[in-house]
Image (cartoon, rainbow, N blue to C red; front, side, top):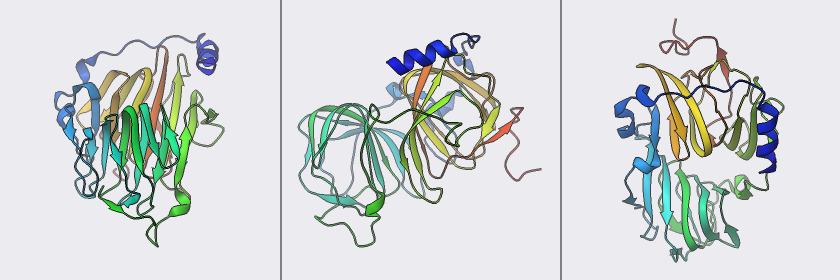
Length: 300
């Protein structure tokens, strides 16, 4: 709260950004979950719950599908874990797994995960057991097959050293994105949750506050997905069907394929926004003065 108040005061002298209309949101986007296309302009409240089914995982978990990759099987989910749910076995998943607790309390091994706690478990790394102490809502990510194999030992080739056993939003420091090399424009602050070596995948929290300096359009060579944890934000996207903008609130999500221009001078917050972000490689940005949706990397 102290940081939020301080940064709001620091940026309050700048002109507010006007509210964006929702009329520009494509009607079909809320039904599209294919990661080969832009997925977004919807709130998780509009999605239906369905049972989570994966080999070796006890039943009883409900999920909402945010996005999926038809080739790899990777999925991004909102999960509801009821109080009392358990997976009494230790073991590993066939693919990388991440959990970010939104609300609730769940014990994983000897660690207790409460609001805004995070863990990353690489494929083949043994973890657990898991027990849900009280009703829990979480963001849940698998980079492929989610099947679970009971085992007290990790697979021999598993990247045990890359596991992020525990991080808490409330314990990680805010760092200026410019100062740590992830942006050329001021006004963004980050809490790094996961950053794998050799320009590997990243997971982080980003904070954006009222009155930040106007930004150019930007694009990334990697895909990017995000969930708005708190606050509100006007988000502009330069999509093949044209310029799109929507006012987002808590629970909004997007998955953006590479090289799509976004942000720009129409984007920003009248108060503040705190986001959860993931990328499959190190975040890098190119900056543009216009929002030509037809321009793509490598095209003339």
